[in-house]
Length: 160
Image (tube, rainbow, N blue to C red; front, side):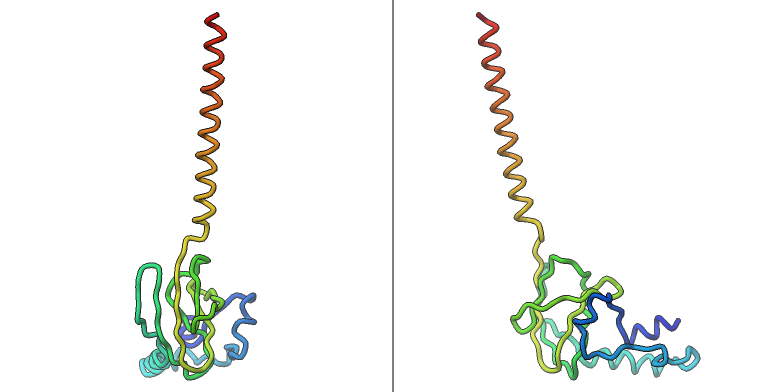
């Protein structure tokens, strides 16, 4: 049950991403409250705290969204989109590193202040796939032409 309580106040990230969240306080076991002290009021206070700095979307499409957020302090902003290398993230027009959260979703570290966040999705290996497809077609066409040419020569030789 403590995991559920803590998930309202903290986020688990990979060790490799620790340097991306410099300045945030590490959540310790002593920062938790006993299960019997957790009630509706504590829950509502935690939810209100989470709603304090919310990303407000101005554009939302299948492969692109843009939103604004005003952070009252430096924080890791949780974005409920699965972490995937195809997503490119920009903050105030500058590329920003994404952070994978414990649930496999995307997070981004933001400094205190007002920010514009944009995420755009592109198929990571689309160009490579197209080049390989065209190469495959060319190879197939070349082999097909070679075989037809060999068969044509073979038929002509046998008819003599």
